[in-house]
Amino acid sequence: MKPARTEAIILHTFAARERDKMVVFLTPDHGKRKGWAYGARSIKSRFGAALEPLAKVRLVYFEREGEEAVRIESADLIRSLFPAQQNLLSSVAATYIAEMMDTFAPAEDPAELMYRLLDRSTEALLEGAPPMAVVAYAEVWILRLGGVFPPARNCIACGAPLNRPLRFDAALQGFACPDCAGRDAYVVANEITDALEAIGKLPAADFAARSTPDEVLFEIRSLAGSIRRHFLGHELKSFEVLASVASAES
Ligand SMILES: [Zn+2]
Image 1 (cartoon, rainbow, N blue to C red):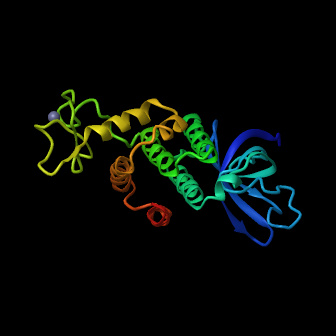
Image 2 (image 1 turned 120 degrees about the horizontal axis):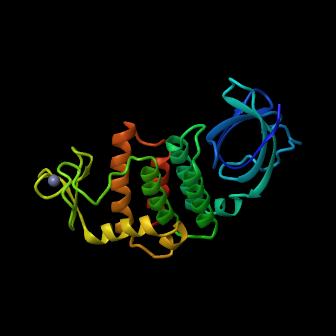
């Protein structure tokens, strides 16, 4: 067996057997993968702190044909999330973004853009960017890259070009023109559309530095949340935790 080498970001780990860990990680070239880290739970583990959630690492692993999980040989830490974890909201935001990635990233397929999004979002949190701006950014982009966020240029029903204000029709799960949108369609205020466009154009850190008002971030997150729940049929596990920490801090 030849060892494979890749850069990766750890999404989550769980304890397995007495001394081992099962590690779920995201790579640019092979999307989401999982692997065994033998002995990772013992005190003198050779993996050290490299297998903590959202750590960016250089991995060496072995892969056996027909087996889903690889065997992780070594993990060298490139960047730890530890400094951001000293702030409760950043830490919970990071967990939430990791769960979204885990849910939407393709398994064993190239995921260069998802990887870069996770890398940049984590970096922004580490640099002290406002956590909820980074969360809103990641929520919209993960849905976009997953092909779930509807395009806002043309009406989803008749194809006519859309003008402002945009209308989001939950029954159609898309943006619709005034003729096609139902009476209870959500009329998207222009400043929310502006912020959505900024998310589409700017890197995570630049969007976060734009100091988008809390109400606007809230509306973006509500819209992204309703699209995500409709697609998944359920809410993410860490959603409530993030909501309660965010409201306690605001
Ligand atoms: Zn229409």
